[in-house]
Amino acid sequence: MKRLLIAAAGLGLALTVAIIGYEGFGAVTRAFTAVGFGLTGVTALRAVELSGAGLSWWMVFPRRHKPTLRVCVWVRLIREAINTLLPVAQVGGEIVGARLLALFGVPPALAGASLLVDILMQAFSLFLFVIVGLGVLATYGADDALVESIMAGTCLMGAALLAFFLAQRFGGARLIDRFLMAMADRTGWSSLADLASLHDELARIYANVPRFVTAVLAHLCFWFVGALEVLLALNLMGYDISYVDAVVIESLAQAVRAAGFLVPAALGVQEAGYIAVCAVFGIPPAEAVALSLVKRVPEIVLGPPFLFAWHAHEAKALLGRSEAS
Image 1 (cartoon, rainbow, N blue to C red):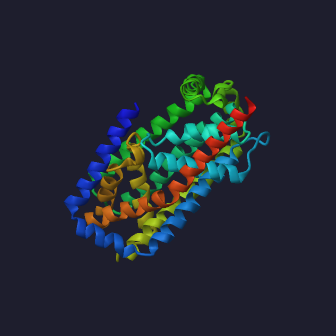
Image 2 (cartoon, helix red, strand yellow):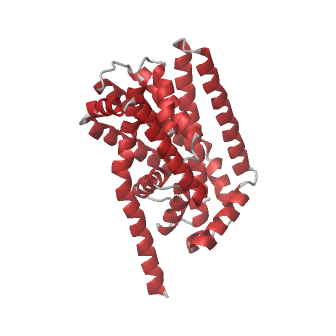
Image 3 (tube, rainbow, N blue to C red):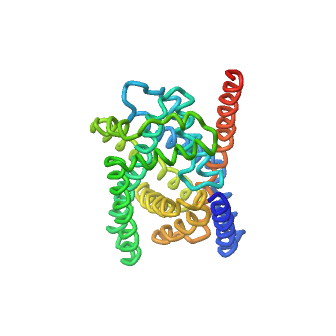
């Protein structure tokens, strides 16, 4: 599996380079450098968005064994760094997230259950975000074929979300129990090996409907922060788009990225998505590719420190086990 992911990452990187070359390295570079110091603003906005995702995750924990908000935000940033910078599928960081929560004192079963709920929350709030963008796009009189293809993909996303939720509520968590047990055997992560069934913890989380709905709505609000990144970048490139336009571009591009979740960092997939969506607003492909590269800058800036933080936590845990033995 690891070899397949590395191969997928290599193909994605090759596709990205090919797209940049096809649109013209010079044109893409000029559009990218036009953003200039705006890259700092884009990075700051991404930090706010990811911190908001950590807040939403923190909100679903029951009062007992509730980690601090700082821990949830910290681990959420580590998860993002792993998903975007390492040759893993875009859900690889979630396994590490469960492990780190256990290291911070959260019972392993609750840690695993919270991660499953957070994945569902993130996907469902993205689904709502895409619906908003698709609704606005339809009012713009966009190409019917484009709208219909995006709508079909959105329907598939909704069906997958429903299936994922039903699996969690009606026994599917036991399959994930076995998967995490197998991970524990291969990695030596004993905190995962101590997992009881996730089913009871999932039931407790979902039993508090107001808390869950509030967390989903909070997550949805922070998706709209990502549209500010698009607004800032394109305006600095010289395109006077509105915030509503930026919401459409961000929501539909995120839907395309989510569809390519098996490709590490959605390399190539994201760039193609921005080209297709930006074309609706008359933005040339070179600028669309530059926008995608601008959106990758926060991953490169914010990611490495949190990868080092992850390794520091693991080293500390290993040292603790060595001293105990």
